[in-house]
Length: 251
Image 1 (cartoon, one colour):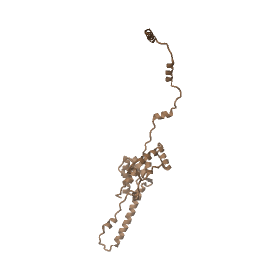
Image 2 (tube, helix red, strand yellow; image 1 turned 45 degrees about the vertical axis):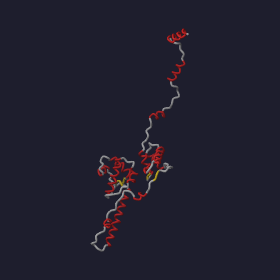
Image 3 (cartoon, rainbow, N blue to C red; image 1 turned 60 degrees about the vertical axis):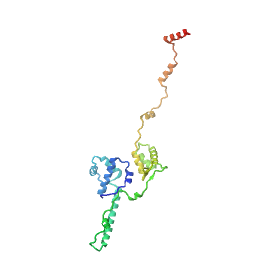
Image 4 (cartoon, rainbow, N blue to C red; image 1 turned 30 degrees about the vertical axis):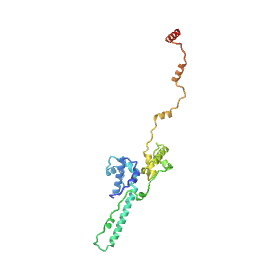
Protein backbone atom coordinates (compact mmCIF):
# COMPACT_ATOMS: atom_id res chain seq x y z
CA UNK A 1 0.00 0.00 0.00
CA UNK A 2 1.57 3.24 -1.20
CA UNK A 3 -1.27 5.61 -0.32
CA UNK A 4 -3.83 6.00 2.44
CA UNK A 5 -6.28 8.71 3.45
CA UNK A 6 -5.62 10.47 6.74
CA UNK A 7 -8.42 11.49 9.12
CA UNK A 8 -6.95 14.46 11.00
CA UNK A 9 -9.72 14.79 13.59
CA UNK A 10 -9.73 11.11 14.52
CA UNK A 11 -5.95 11.02 14.71
CA UNK A 12 -5.71 14.13 16.91
CA UNK A 13 -8.35 12.84 19.33
CA UNK A 14 -6.15 9.82 20.07
CA UNK A 15 -2.71 11.46 19.97
CA UNK A 16 -3.13 14.95 21.47
CA UNK A 17 -1.09 13.84 24.50
CA UNK A 18 1.98 12.89 22.45
CA UNK A 19 5.13 14.99 22.31
CA UNK A 20 6.46 16.19 18.96
CA UNK A 21 8.98 13.35 18.68
CA UNK A 22 6.40 10.76 19.80
CA UNK A 23 3.97 12.03 17.15
CA UNK A 24 6.65 11.77 14.47
CA UNK A 25 7.50 8.25 15.65
CA UNK A 26 3.87 7.10 15.45
CA UNK A 27 3.41 8.52 11.95
CA UNK A 28 6.55 6.82 10.66
CA UNK A 29 5.57 3.51 12.25
CA UNK A 30 2.14 3.70 10.58
CA UNK A 31 3.72 4.53 7.21
CA UNK A 32 6.06 1.55 7.52
CA UNK A 33 3.19 -0.73 8.57
CA UNK A 34 0.97 0.20 5.62
CA UNK A 35 3.84 0.13 3.15
CA UNK A 36 5.02 -3.37 4.14
CA UNK A 37 1.61 -4.75 5.21
CA UNK A 38 3.35 -6.77 7.90
CA UNK A 39 4.06 -6.64 11.63
CA UNK A 40 6.81 -4.38 12.94
CA UNK A 41 9.96 -6.27 14.04
CA UNK A 42 10.51 -6.90 17.75
CA UNK A 43 14.13 -5.73 17.52
CA UNK A 44 14.02 -2.03 18.45
CA UNK A 45 17.40 -1.38 16.87
CA UNK A 46 16.13 -2.74 13.57
CA UNK A 47 12.92 -0.70 13.87
CA UNK A 48 14.81 2.50 14.63
CA UNK A 49 16.99 1.88 11.57
CA UNK A 50 13.99 1.17 9.33
CA UNK A 51 12.19 4.40 10.25
CA UNK A 52 15.41 6.50 10.43
CA UNK A 53 15.22 7.28 14.16
CA UNK A 54 18.32 5.52 15.46
CA UNK A 55 18.70 7.74 18.54
CA UNK A 56 15.09 7.42 19.72
CA UNK A 57 14.71 3.76 20.73
CA UNK A 58 13.07 4.69 24.04
CA UNK A 59 10.46 6.81 22.26
CA UNK A 60 9.79 4.03 19.76
CA UNK A 61 9.24 1.55 22.61
CA UNK A 62 6.76 3.91 24.29
CA UNK A 63 4.69 4.40 21.11
CA UNK A 64 4.70 0.70 20.29
CA UNK A 65 3.44 -0.23 23.76
CA UNK A 66 0.61 2.33 23.60
CA UNK A 67 -0.69 1.92 20.06
CA UNK A 68 0.46 -1.55 18.96
CA UNK A 69 0.14 -5.08 20.33
CA UNK A 70 3.17 -7.30 20.80
CA UNK A 71 2.95 -10.80 19.29
CA UNK A 72 5.57 -13.53 18.76
CA UNK A 73 5.86 -12.41 15.12
CA UNK A 74 6.16 -8.70 15.86
CA UNK A 75 4.10 -5.61 16.74
CA UNK A 76 0.65 -5.43 15.10
CA UNK A 77 -1.88 -2.62 14.71
CA UNK A 78 -5.51 -3.84 14.69
CA UNK A 79 -7.00 -0.80 12.97
CA UNK A 80 -4.42 -0.88 10.20
CA UNK A 81 -4.93 -4.63 9.72
CA UNK A 82 -8.67 -4.09 9.21
CA UNK A 83 -8.06 -1.40 6.62
CA UNK A 84 -5.45 -3.49 4.79
CA UNK A 85 -7.84 -6.45 4.73
CA UNK A 86 -10.70 -4.23 3.59
CA UNK A 87 -8.65 -2.85 0.70
CA UNK A 88 -7.59 -6.37 -0.28
CA UNK A 89 -11.21 -7.53 -0.39
CA UNK A 90 -12.24 -4.55 -2.50
CA UNK A 91 -9.35 -5.10 -4.89
CA UNK A 92 -10.23 -8.78 -5.33
CA UNK A 93 -13.90 -8.02 -5.97
CA UNK A 94 -13.01 -5.26 -8.42
CA UNK A 95 -10.69 -7.56 -10.33
CA UNK A 96 -13.34 -10.32 -10.56
CA UNK A 97 -15.95 -7.82 -11.70
CA UNK A 98 -13.66 -6.43 -14.38
CA UNK A 99 -12.78 -9.91 -15.58
CA UNK A 100 -16.47 -10.82 -15.86
CA UNK A 101 -17.14 -7.76 -17.97
CA UNK A 102 -14.18 -8.49 -20.17
CA UNK A 103 -15.39 -12.05 -20.75
CA UNK A 104 -18.60 -10.64 -22.21
CA UNK A 105 -16.75 -8.61 -24.77
CA UNK A 106 -17.00 -10.45 -28.08
CA UNK A 107 -14.53 -8.35 -29.92
CA UNK A 108 -11.07 -9.36 -28.70
CA UNK A 109 -9.58 -6.26 -30.25
CA UNK A 110 -11.89 -3.86 -28.41
CA UNK A 111 -10.15 -1.39 -26.17
CA UNK A 112 -11.11 -1.32 -22.46
CA UNK A 113 -13.11 1.62 -21.30
CA UNK A 114 -11.71 4.03 -18.79
CA UNK A 115 -13.97 2.62 -16.04
CA UNK A 116 -12.90 -0.96 -16.80
CA UNK A 117 -9.25 -0.01 -16.68
CA UNK A 118 -9.65 1.70 -13.34
CA UNK A 119 -11.59 -1.23 -11.91
CA UNK A 120 -8.45 -3.39 -11.88
CA UNK A 121 -6.56 -0.92 -9.72
CA UNK A 122 -6.56 -1.04 -5.96
CA UNK A 123 -9.11 1.21 -4.33
CA UNK A 124 -7.74 3.90 -2.07
CA UNK A 125 -7.12 2.58 1.47
CA UNK A 126 -7.81 4.67 4.53
CA UNK A 127 -6.33 4.53 8.00
CA UNK A 128 -9.60 4.84 9.90
CA UNK A 129 -12.98 3.18 9.63
CA UNK A 130 -15.18 5.24 7.29
CA UNK A 131 -18.17 4.57 9.52
CA UNK A 132 -16.53 6.64 12.20
CA UNK A 133 -16.59 9.69 9.91
CA UNK A 134 -20.34 9.85 10.34
CA UNK A 135 -20.05 9.58 14.12
CA UNK A 136 -20.58 12.93 15.79
CA UNK A 137 -18.74 13.97 18.91
CA UNK A 138 -20.41 15.36 22.01
CA UNK A 139 -19.75 17.84 24.78
CA UNK A 140 -19.17 16.81 28.35
CA UNK A 141 -22.47 16.67 30.22
CA UNK A 142 -23.15 19.05 33.09
CA UNK A 143 -24.00 16.06 35.30
CA UNK A 144 -20.90 14.08 34.30
CA UNK A 145 -19.30 12.08 37.09
CA UNK A 146 -16.27 9.82 37.20
CA UNK A 147 -17.23 6.17 36.80
CA UNK A 148 -15.80 3.56 39.14
CA UNK A 149 -13.85 1.84 36.37
CA UNK A 150 -12.24 5.09 35.21
CA UNK A 151 -11.55 6.09 38.82
CA UNK A 152 -9.89 2.75 39.59
CA UNK A 153 -7.82 3.05 36.42
CA UNK A 154 -6.65 6.57 37.33
CA UNK A 155 -5.72 5.48 40.88
CA UNK A 156 -3.65 2.63 39.51
CA UNK A 157 -2.10 4.68 36.72
CA UNK A 158 -1.27 7.76 38.84
CA UNK A 159 -1.20 6.93 42.55
CA UNK A 160 0.48 10.30 43.12
CA UNK A 161 -2.70 12.19 42.24
CA UNK A 162 -5.84 13.07 44.17
CA UNK A 163 -8.17 11.46 41.62
CA UNK A 164 -11.31 13.12 42.98
CA UNK A 165 -9.76 16.57 42.72
CA UNK A 166 -8.42 15.82 39.22
CA UNK A 167 -11.92 14.71 38.14
CA UNK A 168 -13.41 18.00 39.36
CA UNK A 169 -10.78 19.96 37.42
CA UNK A 170 -11.44 17.82 34.34
CA UNK A 171 -15.19 18.48 34.49
CA UNK A 172 -14.87 22.23 35.14
CA UNK A 173 -12.41 22.63 32.25
CA UNK A 174 -14.35 20.73 29.59
CA UNK A 175 -17.82 21.94 30.57
CA UNK A 176 -16.57 25.51 30.24
CA UNK A 177 -14.68 24.83 26.98
CA UNK A 178 -16.36 26.70 24.14
CA UNK A 179 -16.55 25.83 20.46
CA UNK A 180 -15.46 22.71 18.63
CA UNK A 181 -12.54 22.19 21.01
CA UNK A 182 -15.03 21.10 23.67
CA UNK A 183 -16.47 18.35 21.43
CA UNK A 184 -14.89 14.88 21.74
CA UNK A 185 -15.64 11.49 20.24
CA UNK A 186 -14.43 9.46 23.22
CA UNK A 187 -14.58 11.06 26.66
CA UNK A 188 -13.03 8.02 28.38
CA UNK A 189 -9.97 8.38 26.15
CA UNK A 190 -9.91 12.13 26.86
CA UNK A 191 -10.00 11.38 30.60
CA UNK A 192 -7.11 8.91 30.33
CA UNK A 193 -5.00 11.45 28.43
CA UNK A 194 -5.86 14.12 31.00
CA UNK A 195 -4.71 11.88 33.87
CA UNK A 196 -1.47 10.97 32.08
CA UNK A 197 -0.62 14.65 31.50
CA UNK A 198 -1.61 15.98 34.94
CA UNK A 199 1.34 17.10 37.03
CA UNK A 200 1.33 16.10 40.68
CA UNK A 201 1.32 19.07 43.10
CA UNK A 202 4.44 19.09 45.23
CA UNK A 203 3.75 19.63 48.96
CA UNK A 204 4.92 22.88 50.54
CA UNK A 205 7.68 22.03 53.06
CA UNK A 206 6.36 24.69 55.43
CA UNK A 207 2.96 23.03 55.38
CA UNK A 208 4.64 19.75 56.23
CA UNK A 209 6.32 21.34 59.24
CA UNK A 210 3.05 22.84 60.45
CA UNK A 211 1.31 19.51 60.10
CA UNK A 212 4.02 17.36 61.66
CA UNK A 213 5.21 19.59 64.55
CA UNK A 214 2.70 19.74 67.38
CA UNK A 215 2.17 23.19 68.91
CA UNK A 216 3.57 23.64 72.43
CA UNK A 217 1.31 24.73 75.31
CA UNK A 218 4.27 25.90 77.46
CA UNK A 219 4.76 29.72 77.80
CA UNK A 220 7.49 31.46 75.86
CA UNK A 221 10.43 32.10 78.29
CA UNK A 222 11.37 35.39 76.62
CA UNK A 223 7.82 36.70 76.86
CA UNK A 224 7.55 35.68 80.49
CA UNK A 225 10.80 37.53 81.35
CA UNK A 226 9.44 40.74 79.80
CA UNK A 227 6.29 40.44 81.86
CA UNK A 228 8.29 39.83 85.03
CA UNK A 229 10.55 42.84 84.40
CA UNK A 230 7.51 45.07 84.11
CA UNK A 231 6.41 44.09 87.61
CA UNK A 232 9.76 44.79 89.35
CA UNK A 233 9.94 48.04 91.42
CA UNK A 234 13.34 49.63 92.06
CA UNK A 235 14.66 52.86 93.67
CA UNK A 236 15.43 55.76 91.35
CA UNK A 237 18.99 56.24 90.14
CA UNK A 238 20.99 59.34 91.26
CA UNK A 239 20.33 61.03 87.97
CA UNK A 240 16.59 60.40 88.26
CA UNK A 241 16.64 61.63 91.94
CA UNK A 242 18.41 64.89 90.94
CA UNK A 243 15.79 65.57 88.28
CA UNK A 244 12.98 65.00 90.80
CA UNK A 245 14.60 67.38 93.35
CA UNK A 246 14.94 70.10 90.72
CA UNK A 247 11.23 69.88 90.03
CA UNK A 248 10.43 70.12 93.77
CA UNK A 249 12.54 73.28 94.23
CA UNK A 250 10.85 74.99 91.36
CA UNK A 251 7.50 74.11 92.81
